[in-house]
Amino acid sequence: MKYFLLGLVIMSIAGNSYAQNDWTLEKDKNGIKVWTKKRANSKLKEYKGSITINTTVDKLVSIFKNVKMHDKFMYKAQPESVKVVKKVNEGDFYTYMIINAPLVKDRDVVAHYKFNEDKKTGTVTIDVEATPALIPESSEYVRVPEMKGYWKFIPKSNNTVEVIHQAYSLTGGSIPDGLANSAAVDTPYTMLSKLKLLAAE
Image (tube, rainbow, N blue to C red):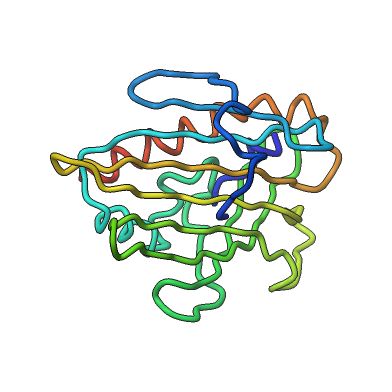
């Protein structure tokens, strides 16, 4: 459920520890592939999902910059809970989101979004990292203490874009690792499915 609670997102990850052969393909359905892997010195899994969508990079970027749309695709995001709490510029801002968590206390997450574009390829990467200390915690929720991830939009031929999302998180509280890992596949699959629908609108 630590992944079940991620919602969001959404980190440039580099190095040999992220080599493709370290990943296990868990799901391949409706054009969406999801892989998982155990993190070093941890029983928790992180995930990576990919899909190719008939859309443009600009359309996807516009969805992510429109924070009010985040609850339409972020996993278990409470409707209308996502808001900007600090803005550096259009491509560098911090958001707050409440994540619905059945059976346990709801979580909230403060996340830093930073957009980077490769001018040569047109690829856009959105690095996302939890910044839990940015705003005071609420007694109503458990603050997500750690989360890192990225969204990458790679333009392909015929007006299609390959979308890759990779992330891991810790959510605080006492949630068994097995329960946390149980949603490591459903989280990216659901978000990529919803993002595909939004991009088609």
